[in-house]
Length: 287
Image: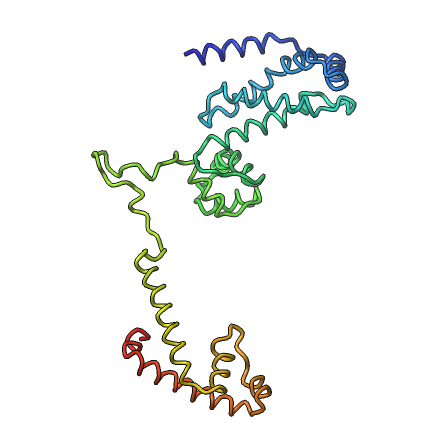
């Protein structure tokens, strides 16, 4: 109730503020810019509060208090006053409109949803224009499917159809907490418990780590069954990330690549025998 009263008082005060003629506006802007005259700044901002209120009313359908929107618009108005260059011969209202709108839109994007969104200029355009474009496109002779709607909005605003679909779903329903119970009963299961994760379970992660460590130990023990040349070929061919070619290894060892292949095959067979002999359970875990 108090907020409504304060809002009405603010609106009445703004509507009573006198309009500034072009010459008077230019004079006040020069006083503020060149002399930092606070009274001049006050006169400029008071005279343009009706512009702030008018613009705030256009954003009321986003469900945020009008007083908050007006406050954010006033911040944008002050920012415009700080950046305004009177020598450019542009009316202050024309220049300030952009800053007022931008300030209100940033406030809406920060507070409309607990989920952060609309950070790029294209996403902001999608957020603030999707409803308008949907309504305009729906006025055609035939109803539009969602696929057609998303395609046409995507082309109009320069965003992907997936972004349009996601924004449409966000605007069609309010945020819903994952901690909300599924039913009205006390102690009912929360929605979060129905989320499915593709990540492995903790016991699976631990088990995999144990298996990797165990197999690494088995391999180190089995490699002892190889002679120096066999060990080098296995290391270069199988245990190196890049993996040397048969031809390159042959040139290094002074043998043919076919001979390298034969030695590698023999070494792999020796490794298999050593692994099974030392660890009978290896065949079961490797299967």
